[in-house]
Image 1 (tube, one colour):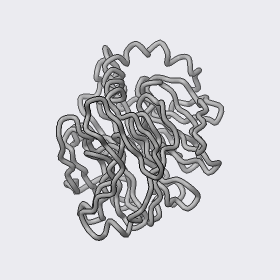
Image 2: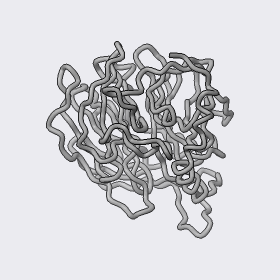
Image 3: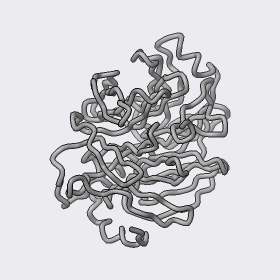
Image 4: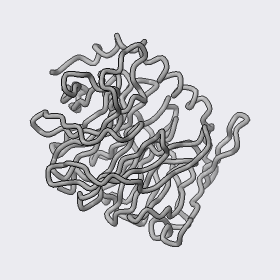
Length: 342
């Protein structure tokens, strides 16, 4: 059904735990300054973080120019998530602390699309509708350009989702999404006793694909549609599944691990390029992986990223949401964008 954006505001008080965690993360983030071509971070008592490309393999330099520069597009957000590039020349960005989805233009301007409780991961679907994981609604929703939304799904077998986190368009035109408890509203019960990965078809039917992850988060298809990668933020690993013709998942296995300290970044957002390489948030920034699970290198960031998307008409730019800011980084590869590919 369609609803007013105001209907979510009554649930805002229930966001306390999730918002406190994100607010602390945002406050602890670096103050980023642009000094010539180099981004410098100035943290209050925290180790300095700067942009740096650190290769673990020579294959990393097939993805990035050694002299690549990171650009900060916009700042002063609470906690950024869910970037989606729009061909009109802006980036949709969720702010989980300010409880809004913005259009962010390349000159730094922000334009509010909608005010709602804790929006998270976004994508376009095959109909070019903006799809959002709405944590407070505990739903997958479709948004119109004027900020109205329709709930596409909010239950599985009569029970409310936990807190849908990230979503991707599949090769079969269905939507695939994760449902951890990471943003479950305080005081609301967990009705589904596991954290699943689901498929939502165009008829509104929801099918559970797997429940073997602890806290499933970001997810991405391989370019041929035969593999689905899913991050487990609690286990700090990336799992990969074989995808059947009907979207069924099988042969789940560990693709890669991203170990780190207690306050380091964890596997969260994930995107693939046309060659099957993966770009996954992790400790210090973004980790680059080849299709065989070899860690190629790390894009060290001034602020800890949560998600990323392919931008520009040629899909050769990474749009990165990192704590209080949105950044862009040119690459030497071409991104795989599922809703354009099939």
